[in-house]
Image 1 (tube, rainbow, N blue to C red):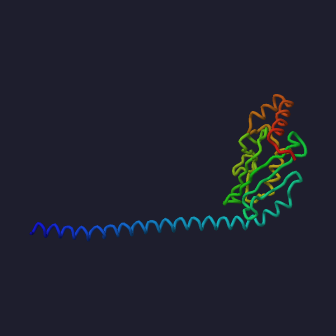
Image 2 (tube, rainbow, N blue to C red):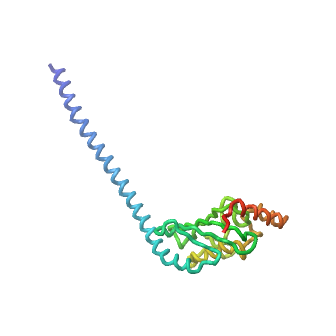
Image 3 (cartoon, rainbow, N blue to C red):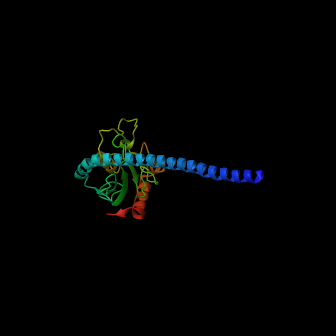
Length: 208
């Protein structure tokens, strides 16, 4: 009888203990989930605030940029509500790259204008200051530039556009190349360099 009583009592204890333990664990999981949701929500709010701040800046800077475009440049926005990403097309009217259209993607980071915009050339090009992966070498886009011509908070988006446009003329630099092979090609045989530039234009650069 005692053994049967103990067995029933143990079953009761187990039946009481297990639900309580499960409930406590469930509460802990629920609390942890809520904390994660709150943290995620806070991060999203910070990102939204940053985007609003940068949009406020760009609402002023973009019209100024568009009003001061070089005649060889065009700007397009995929979404008129997304001002921090846009495309730039450059149609050089002189020099080695005359006759081609070169596309650049520009993205303005959350930290603008403390840090410079990010720029990538979307058109394959044979150029000493633009490599074949689209990286662009321009002092203006460097946060730390040895020639004191790098990015500063006083710079504007229109300065970036003019700088990129000048890579096809005044700022073309064979002495400090990003694409070393292109610079060496120019130094070795200018006619060969010119032919390769034209070959790339015919293959990759959209005609104007």
